Length: 331
Ligand code: SAM
Ligand code: DTB
Ligand code: SF4
Image 1 (cartoon, rainbow, N blue to C red):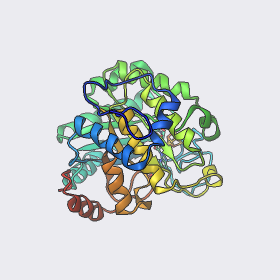
Image 2: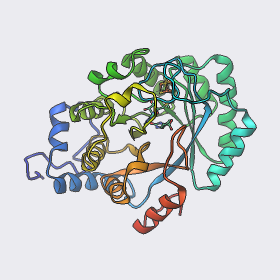
Image 3: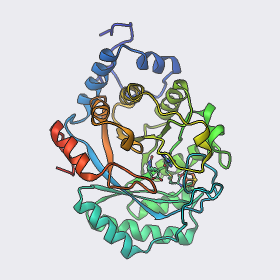
């Protein structure tokens, strides 16, 4: 089938295998389709691979906040900037279990535990492994994001039963150096390989709204889709404003329709990946979130806070999904 502009219609079926050889021009052609044609293609792919009436609900927990030695220009937790955030020590296991139980009771099926580290120390990793086992014992899926890992550390997390590791490429290769200087994109790609080789599922995406152009956003999708395996989970974060960080000087929130187009393009390029509408939902209307769900977004973070910034309230999310007839942990 051929869509109106001549781009071949990918319905995600047998004729459209999962690809790892995406060219930027192809991503741009998809993104630039007339809106109805792009949405039809994204929805066709989505329906072939997922229940279009279901959205996954995960919850975030900052197990170690602030004081991070990295200089990510968007982040409230970097020690390089004065963001007014108070740094904390690593949470203890009992506190993590209590919070996880509350998140489960509130409808989360997965807990994503985040630490503001460049990379974990082995002593810290022992404690995180304990937390993973404890959260799994509650019957929840586990995800952690701890910074860069060696292959040995990834193996230890795998042995602890970890389901997912989150480590984002954040942006395009061209824009990356404008945002982070303390670690290279290749360092991140190396960590992703260690995680994958250890048999842990990969959660990897990035941020939009930092001042990057549309080509950077599409360059990020090409980077993700051309990894040796598509990440099982692809978070798309809209930058949640943080005072005192350099991104304030360049930030520009994308036009709402541009974000929907990006989600649809991600859905088509990574047909079997869960696409998570992550940070920044607080800036979106119900209608924009609905369009993102129609475009193939099928996961959200629930809970009033993400790590250090705000998220829509649970009742607002429950109300929206209910009006759409979408099933989730909130229903
Ligand atoms: N320190 C670890 C790391 O960077 O890998 C884990 C935690 S870090 C907060 C996880 C991801 O959250 C970042 O890679 C970035 O994509 C996203 N993030 C951080 N601050 C954000 C913000 N203000 N708005 C949107 N996304 C953000
Ligand atoms: C991801 O891509 N988004 C989440 C999770 N992975 C760890 C984090 C969003 C953080 C938003 C900013 C904050 O609350 O500090
Ligand atoms: Fe540190 Fe992660 Fe924030 Fe970067 S994004 S400053 S690595 S906590």
